[in-house]
Image: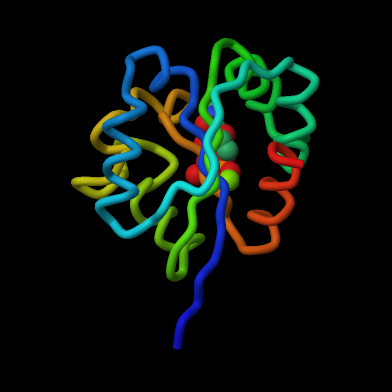
Length: 135
Ligand code: IDP
Ligand code: MG
């Protein structure tokens, strides 16, 4: 049975700054995820706060929003079989120190806050996040 999905991926400022776009895109495409849309943008702190709204009560919320708006990011729609789960597996754990070998966060993440990529955590959130950046 085919279960093609779309999910949202973001290459965060720390990875854009280090020119890791093509390395990260290669990891996705080699794993069978297709990039159906991609753009480089620089969002405001208000936009970052709106995107990360679910985390507004967390102690790291302010830093998180400052960080995501600190420089250019690359937002992408990934498409493929079980794309939401597959993207999360390819990304690795939130904390790069805990991430499995070969994952993007293990390869490139600097710290829990500068962890190089974002990925939607459910199909529902994927739809909302794609809408947020692409509609
Ligand atoms: P995720 O990106 O793996 O889905 P979330 O729990 O949704 O992780 O957190 C969103 C982002 O907030 C993380 O990617 C990370 O950059 C940041 N973050 C999460 N937990 C912490 C923390 O304990 N300290 C600082 N930043 C954090
Ligand atoms: Mg998350």
